[in-house]
Image (cartoon, rainbow, N blue to C red; front, side, top):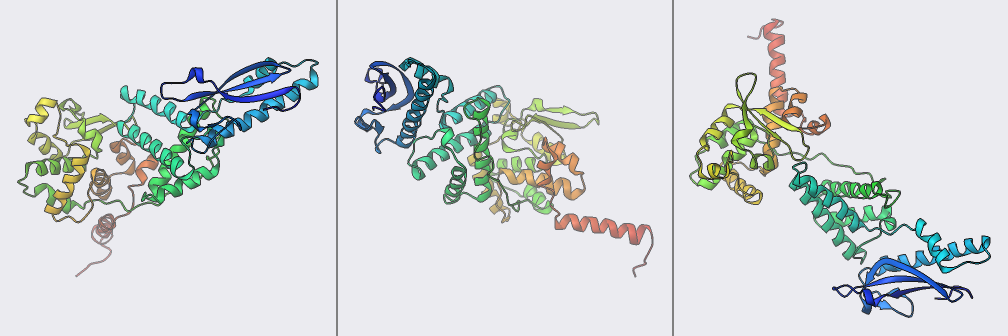
Amino acid sequence: MKVNEDLSILFWLNRQKASKDGLVPIWVRITINGKRDGFSSGKKIHPDAWDEKAAIAGMNCPDYKLINSYVAKTRVELEKHYNQLVAVNKRVTATMVKDAYMPKQILQKTLMQAFKLHNEEFAERVSKNKGSKGTLARYERLKDKVQDFLRKKLKLGDIALEDIEMAFAVNFFHHLTMDNIGDNTAMKYVKTLKQIIDRAIDEGWIKHNTISGFKCTYVDPDRETLEMHELVGMYEKEITVERLAEVRDVYVFCCFTGYAYETVYNLEPANIFKGLDGKLWITKDRQKTGVEETVPLLPIALAIIEKYKNHPYCVEENKLLPVNSNVRYNAYIKEVATICGIKKALTTHTARHTFATTVLLENDVPIETVGKLLGHKDLRSTQIYAKITKRKISNNMKALESRIFCEQGLLKVS
């Protein structure tokens, strides 16, 4: 396309460099007074989706907005550099314009490229046991949800990082909540998306995170926990179906150790050791935080370990307990709840909540100790469990009553 009598800027398909998937790279050609130079745009398109006359992508291209934004911005930038050079040079060549543009060019990295960078790095951490497979799976789920949002709402296959605005976060959050995802979960997805973009900033791909100002707020949910009588009743319930009895025992073990599903799944006999107090303890690094989670073994937990020490699966796989896949575990524990007459929604998480609340906090274990036992890095992570329960109020009031009316003899109650 001719800009003036001397300058022409053309976007064209370099068909000789077509890839096996049929996509052809888009090149940029600068021509000044009949002499030309050029460079690759880094963008690819199917030839059928390219409008040769207008030199833009057609709407049948899934990335047409991304490509056409690049075309428009690049054309403006090249013309600007040409005018700057003409103002101070008697003779300007196509190569001079290209060289002036290229150092300042921000090769438009995309959001999916940022995900690729971030997730591949985290996958390497997982391979070195420095990250959780579950967390990696969550990053991949987020990537899939962003791609779904791009396709359905923005009609894009990808988006340049520099084209992301605050509205992107707002609309993505709304898209998630309309897809039957709870507000808290949707907020966590947006929070993680901000981390992905921050990683791109660290890499020098963009200068600012335009969605950093999106405030992620959370509503503290009512966390399901078992009361002690329910927990003991479950443990003592006779269950004749072997698979359900095993899941029940693993669940109760988690209730008395606070271990998350992924941790207990990977426990081995070697994780047990004798502590300074002469009693048996169990230890395992939490893959989620990398913090050691060391817990003294209470009698019920010890009894469950003893029960399965000669279990064929445990012996063959060198496992402490016979733990099912996460999907089966969560399905079977619901059957166990029905058998035990428990009407609460039990999951892999409720056992950890039960340990923190019913076993520890309601029995006046200091919150600092609770945090240590749960493997938390920050006390703020522990405080989500520290809600005041009716049981704890009752225990505290009984202790208060005993001190005031019995020990001090302030009032004789007939």
